Image 1: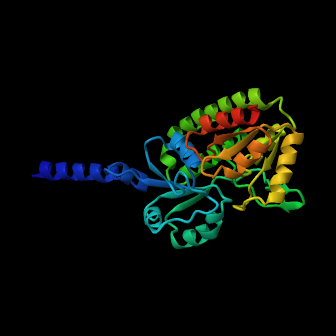
Image 2 (image 1 turned 135 degrees about the vertical axis):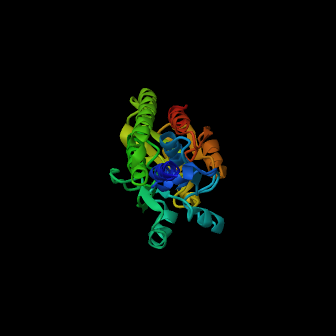
Image 3 (image 1 turned 90 degrees about the horizontal axis):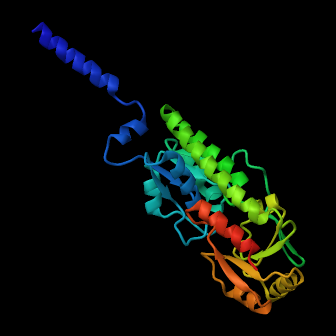
Length: 292
């Protein structure tokens, strides 16, 4: 009898000692993975590389949508309530509009700002005598800022899953190696293009342009179509700088870009800054900038 009672005591002790004390561990034993959210597709790439298959990573802004005009659906909000963390860019309009209230009402969801430690950059834009200023949110579109994003994601994950630090650190190192390879490829394409100007529909390449001393002249700004006067000014710049290509983001209408391309006898090249495959996206952008 004593042996029987002792055996039950041992089994009970083992069960309690093995009981997970983290939400991550609890979820890993169920059929459903714990959920993480990111604001845009490129962040999903970075998070995926670090967490691998330990989490289900969902995206707020779906492919083909613009972060400038996006608003989360009620279904997304309901799903977000189940998430362990939301990784955000930090300067996108919809993030600034509602993330403070969200954190206040849902303290169980970590809110991780991927722009912490990012060099501050204003979004300068002009059309002739019209000048605009704002915060540039496109922090993922340059290798030097992508490294900061990767580190912020890594530090953010450790806030709720420190037990697996070695696993995440190993994956972070691999991601940083990939970023370094992309930088080397871009160096070869852009290092000798200082002061080159290029036309782009929406000014998303400020960080990349700043690093390589390029100049982006945008056609559209803050969702506003250019006036005929502004289009004429852009055509003049293109002719003066011998620009023959215009970069247009995948989710935008190309009609105004086509008008300019016809006037300068040039061509329109589609890029995908919000694409998931970050290395491929960056190499294609580098090729588009140097295309003639």
